[in-house]
Length: 285
Image 1 (cartoon, rainbow, N blue to C red):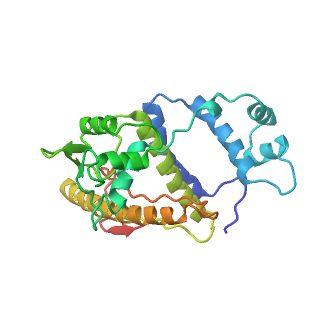
Image 2 (image 1 turned 90 degrees about the horizontal axis):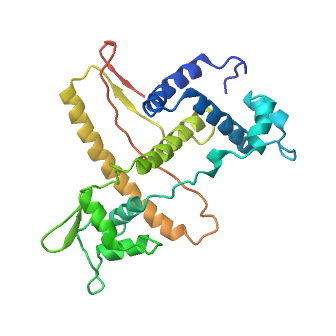
Image 3 (image 1 turned 90 degrees about the vertical axis):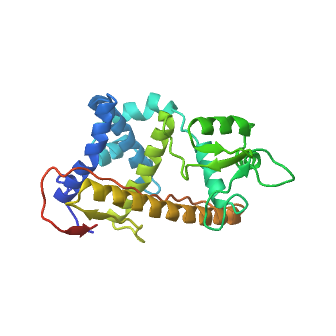
């Protein structure tokens, strides 16, 4: 691993951080979240990470050590460590029920076909056959009526009901289009894990995680639309396949003591208009 002066961060890393933070700051300003608020939140996170990830075996984590690791004044360290933090009382949202139901619909063999497509399901259980009602009951640990979820999904055009009272899935992935809390939940978890994987690789930890991208420039908007459609189609097929395999392995591993790991796999597509015309060509990342 390349060594750098602790007081002078790598220019390459600083440049990467600047690029990484720009869309986040754009989001913060959009929602009127100011720098003082983020600075205070960042102090708390620095202390949390330093405490959890950089302990010294057999020694107590002191205010002085935390101040040394983080650069935060000991007075602030003491205040943040021992005073009630209003942010600490925020309850973390559990995994969306809708996402769990759709994942099961696409992965369990009795609810999906061999290609991983969701089968049309009768609304109510009849003669023990798979139904939307039995799907929701299998996933939900709460007393939730399948009719309530079906009404909400119909309103959001996630499903449609045909003339034979069969429920058809219209969206192969749960995309929270209206509920801001749902969107924020997935934003935090998905981006966290992508950055965690990239950080793992940048710190030369082994084995490295898969983290690849494809980049091309000098394209027309029509070509971007074509590439976006192809990317979404291929990515959705890949996600459905991994979803089926993960569901199978989870059911097999769930009773074993060593079943203590989690994973997340995702894919993304992004495009924007070039601010400066660059040399024609291609680049793989």
